[in-house]
Length: 103
Ligand SMILES: [Zn+2]
Ligand SMILES: [Zn+2]
Image 1 (cartoon, protein in one colour):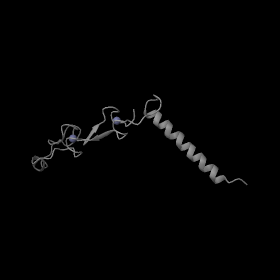
Image 2: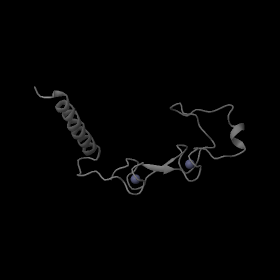
Image 3: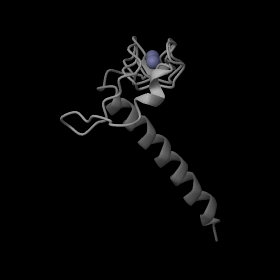
Image 4: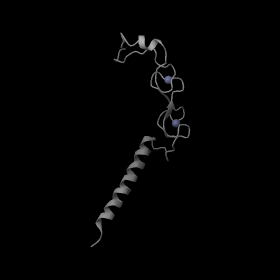
């Protein structure tokens, strides 16, 4: 009687590897081997240098602005102290891979 357990485990490992490769290929528009972006190391961006990832400019005005928040047309809270560099996201998208982490 053959040990079925190890054979089944191997099938699972191979199947998982194929699925990962296919997903990566689709993600990159089937343009060949996915390469981890060397500019951002695959992270897709970097913490904003201007606000250090906070998304807002640290200022004395911030606390005063917490009351009477205005919302824009899609319901986002307009943040008058949002970082101008990252637009309040706290991240600067990588200029090479545009945030995907792969090139
Ligand atoms: Zn990148
Ligand atoms: Zn910023």
